Length: 332
Ligand code: NAD
Image (cartoon, rainbow, N blue to C red; front, side, top):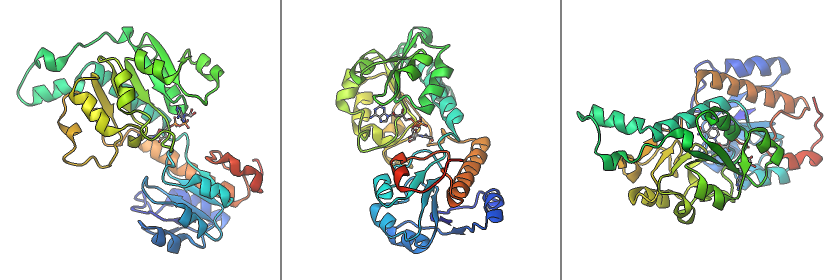
């Protein structure tokens, strides 16, 4: 197994992973690579490639050069830096740790929503800088949560967990997800609608789609223009799903009431980003997934995935199921 973007070893020399792999004769090599050629040099002979980072380029060029690779797995959920189609063409399974941080991201999203509506971050800032109550034009209308409509863009694992947390707070819940089964939405008492209706009716609009060519800038100037001026946008998925320039403009002109963001077009958020000085935003540094418990789940999930594939079994979370007919693995 080649871990190609090792920045650190979780503080214990991969003890948890080695406990699973060593009895099976699976050896781990680690390298810190940033470029395609460095990754190829480190992983060319590996049976499985593991990445942790969001920006490590597992491109078609890298994938074509992996001579023995059967599995590429990311310590995480989003696999937007892996060319999944190229992996499928080469008969390589792409896997993730699809469930490790669902509770954390859902809790974080719910807290961002409550913080936005009740202006928690703004009020805290005012007090810390020697003030008391902010002027009404800065405060804006603080609406009663139980009258608001929650709109979820994407209705996968995280969005459904957000819905379960927010159900007691809001009046109703809508979702836009062209790929989800209606029964899934019915089960959560969520009404499936088109994107235009969701944007027009949502008071809290929360994004939970993967970053794909089809979701890049899914929310741009046109979509923001459809939102109510009193509505909030929450993004804990991936920065580039939102056209950040258009969002900044919508916030500066009060086209929408506010935004809460854990993810950004460029991370870390550049020092000069106008988002840093806007009053109507709540910002967190891509930490929605974090808890010590989630890290343990993450490591166990990746360790099991590697062990499964190298022993000839399908892992629990396959990102490219299209590869299955081409791949002689067994069901556990
Ligand atoms: P998931 O795969 O369970 O759900 C994604 C949903 O998006 C699916 O139901 C899918 O049908 C839907 N979808 C795909 N394309 C769509 C489109 N064009 N329009 C509307 N819906 C679409 O994934 P999840 O576990 O809910 O995670 C969602 C995303 O959150 C991940 O892909 C990842 O990028 C991001 N994430 C962020 C953090 C963080 O730290 N902020 C942590 C984990 C995951």
